[in-house]
Length: 498
Ligand SMILES: [Zn+2]
Image (cartoon, rainbow, N blue to C red; front, top):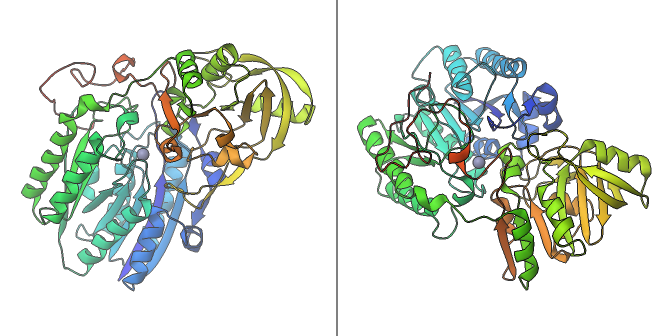
């Protein structure tokens, strides 16, 4: 049993200004051949789960390519083409193959290719030169799944959880179905159903009895009943300005496309029926700070519109400005991307005081830099290791990073946007969020792992690269009517991919 594996992951955002090129992917590593196995082994990545499953099945593994990058706007054509070419060439060189496993995100955007993951799968399929050789794909729960992807891959499996804690399981599940398909035990076929609707990411937790947890429970029930081999749900990365993006239900069945359609429709309707429940209350930055001061315990303020994992720049000073105005002496901490200010702090050195102008330098559409008189408390290199999540065990960095202090506020000024998991980035620079009355985060879900009995969270709303109110976004390419811009009780089919 000879199986090739490759991974190429990026989450795009049409509202983000960041373009990811080769150097951005290289920062996280561009691995080929045996380096893929060396890098993924012992981690909790989707690729790790697939590798372990294939090894258990005594498969001969041909590792080809692995690269990922922090979320942003889009991948430039040069690196997309290079990655696809590397994967396609690797497949051609690896023939004959019995199967292929691909770890993709599913919400990649490119300058030219309108269906980037579909393009990767198509390139693989063309090299295989035999439509019966199974391709298994694992995806993020926020994937934008196209019909072409479902047509070209026999097996597609999405994360079950948000916060994402099951990347390993997802890779293992996809690879497990692949092994069974290669052995001829099953004849998997993937079907999708999609509506022209998007829902806020913030309300999409699979925790407790929240809306997506109910959809997850329904899906696990369908699998347990044997109506499908695997059921996935995609509430979708909503800041994708493309007509064919929408909430999606997906089913992999054993050679029964009609049953797959029925199950995918059932799961899709379960998301649609709960669409209003995805809206969570949020406050202005100043009101959130006031509410935090009034609360007896600690507060995590969620700077949702500037969420870096959603593709935003991470350089909004909106919350910092509110803290300086409303609660300058309260023990609080914020992270802001501003390489200029970080470099200025390094030039001044620890202990120096100066007037800084922080944030709003890379994304200047909504705010001006916040003027702050502050002391350089600490300088650090910003390197840390993820303690969980989809990149668990991998290293990341905020680049050249300075801790500035103004009154009670510690401002962590980094040089790079990054995927926030928990508080690894604060801890790496000596900030203990447990000693802060207010700690802020620029992610949409992982902060919930930091909740304790005396800790509350408050999302803030406002302008940014990941705005909460999707109906207010100036969409250029979405087809009307769609939810939530048009309040219709009748779900609309998502348009086909152009
Ligand atoms: Zn996701």
